[in-house]
Amino acid sequence: MRLVFHIFGALAGARTCRRTVSRKHQLTTADAGKATSSLLDPNITKTAAARHFGVTRATLNPAFERAGIQDHGPPAPSPSRAKRHSEPMTSEEL
Image (tube, rainbow, N blue to C red; front, side, top):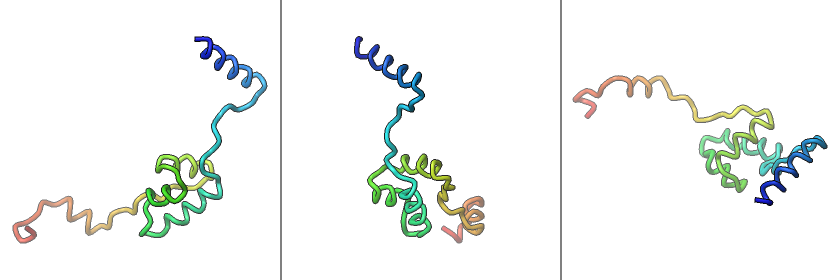
């Protein structure tokens, strides 16, 4: 219980000194830019880019936001594919 009070006291003291208390970012702004440029290649997935930098996919999103980079995400489906899935299959397609 004393440990909890000690931690809260340290956080309150840091707040009064106007220090930010947070963890170091795992991905730098430069690395986020490199990850974004690698995602432009259609053969590289977000998981592969994250694995290359030793982070998880979820870590890439905040790094992109800090760097001011728009997340490209998966490409939009082509109109022919969207049409194919919106209509029921005919007996010829089976």
